Length: 339
Image (cartoon, rainbow, N blue to C red; front, top):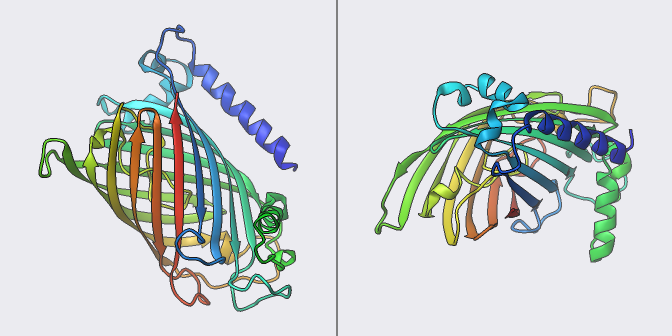
């Protein structure tokens, strides 16, 4: 399927879902947000291997209190456990388009490298809904996309390397074959707040969470926590989002003026399936034995200025397959604008 047609159909479907719930008057307060995320191992690790690049463009819609009783909004408030708990909970929606790429360590070789991970690409549409209270969140995301040459990841990397004058990746002819991907991600967390740290303006919080993924791309269970210290931590709940698989984060933020915080977090995952290591269900040239237990650690900083948010994250991931020399590290940069 042509990726452009696929994305257009997904956007039309998502817009239809939102319209089902938008029968309120125009004076309802709508909040919209756009985020661009770029993740690359060049940022901190100065490598070009494993999970080497990811990009995600997300649109977030918070429809306002009066809109939450109609259509799909009412359905979600009745069926998300946090939303139906009776607490003061906001519900917002997200639509994202993303692409991930995975390569072996030596991208100069054009032959099949059997003692390293296969080349693989993944392009997807992500449909998300999040219920968020002052100290609780629950999110559900559905990814629909394509693994293989149809993802366009090989073309993207070759063109980017040509543009910046980097070494060309020569092994994309051996990437995993085409396979449709369908994946469901769920996470829930609760924040515990210490109101003051040294002054009335500074505060500290801890947000433990648990989550799971189910699908032919990823299947795993996860537990983790995020610690933050900074000014006005109520502007968002937990750290900013990252590209899956990752610690959960908030696509939405609020507040005015300038604020910032520092954060550190970790997530342990028990992985049952990882298509980029296990290979597709369709016949493929090779695969590698994955590590079932994987740990992500992250540190970073977030800055707010009025309707803008900038997040910078340094991620450390433990060895995830048999041929890896050790762990992998990469950086994530997210720029968001609220309107």
